[in-house]
Image 1 (spheres, rainbow, N blue to C red):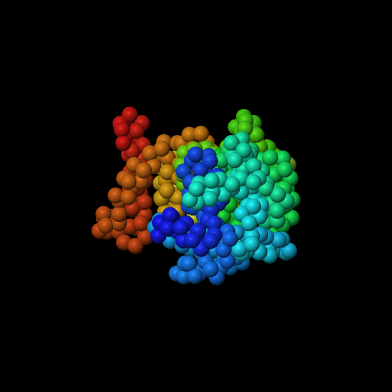
Image 2: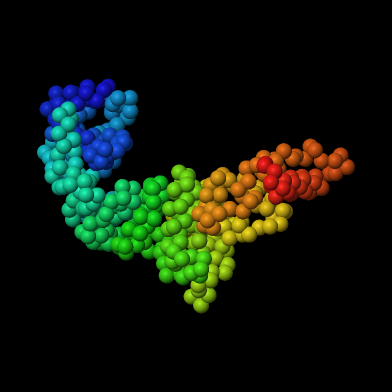
Amino acid sequence: MTEKEFVNQIRTAGARVFIVGGWVRDFLRQVPAHDKDYMVAGIDEEKFQQVFPKAPRVGKAFPVYLVEIDGHHAEVAFARKEEKQGAGYRGFVVEYGREVTLEEDLYRRDTTINSMAMELPSGEIFDFYGGRSDVEQGIIRPVSHHFAEDPVRALRAARQAAEFNFTLAEETKTAMNACREELAGEPAERLLQELKRALMTEKPSRFFRALQETGLLDVTFPELAKLIGKTQPEAFHPEGDAFEHTMLVVDTVAAETDSLLARFCGLVHDLGKGETPSEMLPHHYGHEVRGQDVLRKWNQRMTLPKKWLQGGLLVIEQHMRAPRLTKAGKITELLLKVNSSPLTMAEFQAVIRADHHSLPFYLEQAPAILARMQQVNGNQAPNTLTGAAIGDWVRSQQVKAYQELKNRNQGDTEL
């Protein structure tokens, strides 16, 4: 059915229907809005089921129905109130039904910019808590004391500050810090979901800085918090400590590529510096080895996507070595290793370039070199060779292909 038909059926049943949350916020920001979430008020569940008998119920703690509107399965929720009686995001008692008002529903929401509703079909916007003003001023502000009742709202506020380049109001910072104890016990899956969304923002560093500023970084991403205060040689890192360097790298990678994998690898490439003994500072000898252990422990704490773990381990292992390789055999080995990893060569290049500000010849020309190397296969080996000797011959020919391309480049011949 069309949205108009859906609205008419709700209103015919004596109820009201609203678009709520992020769609209204983005409409006021004049940016493309995402999927619409609908909320109905003045109707009970039994009556709704009579009007939409084929709509499946997907909500568990409270009713949410999937209704096909304009060719999409849209979520339709009932106006509801919540009371916190237990720990974590599951510790809510929910009240919904015909008596719950629009104002009560919006009051339970996290921030003012998400607490507005547009009624259909009139298009009138209801803004009881100053959301429109905060959108205009670029401020993240809690609606009420209910903010701290779901601790992941603190992560969401940090992520929205990064996503929209908004400022955290002082009361937001206080409310976020109040989530610290419960955040430490939140399911890792909820933290991972916010991490993914934060990494896809224009400047992911804003997310981590917001957590740092509100005292939450060490209980959400302790691997990153340990980088704070880990000094580095100023001649190579005028930006500051290992945390500042990591923030610079992840933002630089984000400016070059939309790849979530590359951005994560930029984030974790120097994790080992957080474990550098204080007596070794400002140097970080062996951090590429320690960093792999840190990432593996992170994965034990918060099961990471498999490609993130594999790609991150490769970048941590190779990010110091890659720009310094000179021997053709080692270079060939690394190119083939990257090529067989979850990382594309472009993703690997983005991280190394962000970390070192440039790429060596072989990485700049990696696609052409790999293309030439991949033309070599065991079927071309001399008939006299068997077994492992064929593999050795293939590798020698791949090394030779790299050397030829390098020599041609040094002779100012284009690849």
